[in-house]
Length: 208
Image 1 (cartoon, helix red, strand yellow):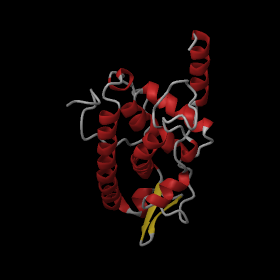
Image 2: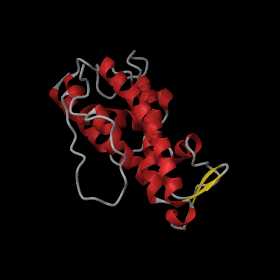
Image 3: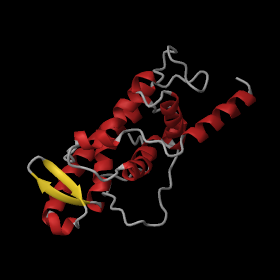
Image 4: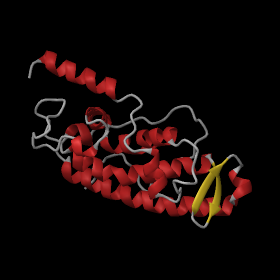
């Protein structure tokens, strides 16, 4: 492949990764205690934050950028992602990554990290059918005890799904230097958003 083609492919990837979400608000609302018929607060910013803080750090910036570009090219449809067989051509000629499988592996971790990221920063009201987001302060509606319980339960689920994703990355991309050697600086100015602590120090993605 010529340098011109490579440069064009990279430009497409960079352009397409801006403000792209890999899951929908409905996914988060349907698959977590935030029942869809009770939640009206937008979760998009929390999904984007969870992608940057959790998924990007595990995948590394190169693989993450390629996935976002393929996701946009697939019109946000998992079934239209390249699967490495060549049936659906990837953006970069010769790319054999199974993006369908990669997406399936990160889907649940991203949902639960998005839920956890949003949870302490929106007003909540615990009800039998789930939790309702509204305009009241969460400390007045559900109480800190209720919030702590929701965070603890959600964190346990998010961490377990993240373990599965980490194992998949290690097994699938163990020889890919762009996945194993990249480190992402997720530091920056605090915007008052709670980030659950990681259960491990991800200094190396595949520490076997």
